[in-house]
Length: 412
Picture 1 (tube, one colour):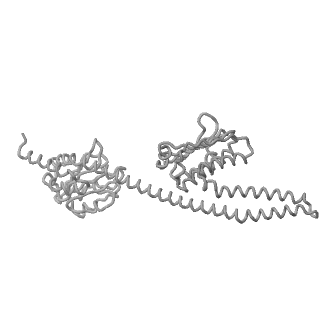
Picture 2 (cartoon, rainbow, N blue to C red; picture 1 turned 135 degrees about the vertical axis):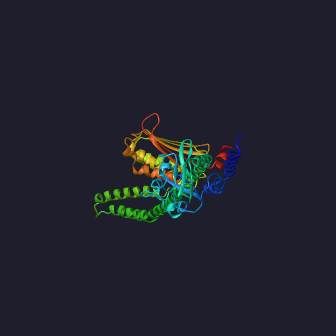
Picture 3 (cartoon, helix red, strand yellow; picture 1 turned 90 degrees about the vertical axis):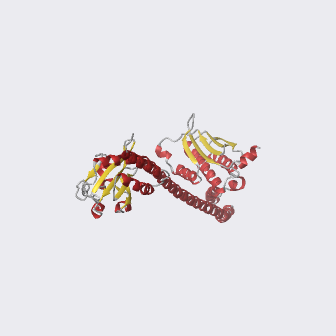
């Protein structure tokens, strides 16, 4: 059986345990248990310092006398007066007069509160969880030589009660800080993405405006000039043979200009949608390439493209446009396949060719591929590029989630 003294001490420990329940922050715990601890270890100042997860910094929480330790932001462990305890070099610190104890006073030590508040008698024990030191419990008194090894053992018992709670709180705070940092980073990234998306929309609108201006003004002027040159070439007093090459050159310039206008202002996309615009571009690009390239488009999107926001639709078209152009210009393929698939709320657009493929990392990092990646990122789509599965060539795939309302209505 416990003697009265032991029974009283046991009740104090139970009291500390009860006071810990429901406390949600370090300061609350210290304030809640300080009075109960004072019955076991008399003190004028009580503090707990907690090591940060990175192991380089620590922060103090205190009760009783208020010092600069708790007002200070997280400080380097190397400047702590009890750094030897926090690093595990010693198992405890016991001082008869800390004001004169050289263990607490060294170059760079943050020990001024010891002198300012005359904290002479001091004892310190580590807070351990599964053998790891997460902090320290410290008791201080204005009286010199007031603590003994018996007090150290009592402090260790108290530390064993406190350590799991502090460990859990530290983990929770770290998780909260990490969540805040991640949320802020995502918010910044989303803000940048939305800003870039708006800029892209503005550039697309300006691109279309330029296309219309070229069509309505420049191309019209060139057409009138071409007709005048054709009339001049028929006059007997002029050398028709000299004018005819100029007419052919002008006709070629007009043809090139029409292509630029078409790319700047994709009329088929605006009038008929993504699938039709892709098919039209694929057919026209292959035809104008002058090469015998077989092309095919498989549309299994179940009209998932119909409800796409115009900005998203334009971005998808531009990605496929760039992929097809790259395949024809650089891959020298014999066939190109574009596949549109919608399944389980995910839209996938894939462009495959059997050309030369990507032969080097430097070739993979071209501006065209970078542009496709950027467009995909702006609409929160996933962009993948690599060798074609089961053969030569390149495969480019863009995937993004889509609304399922239209898909369900179509399948019904």
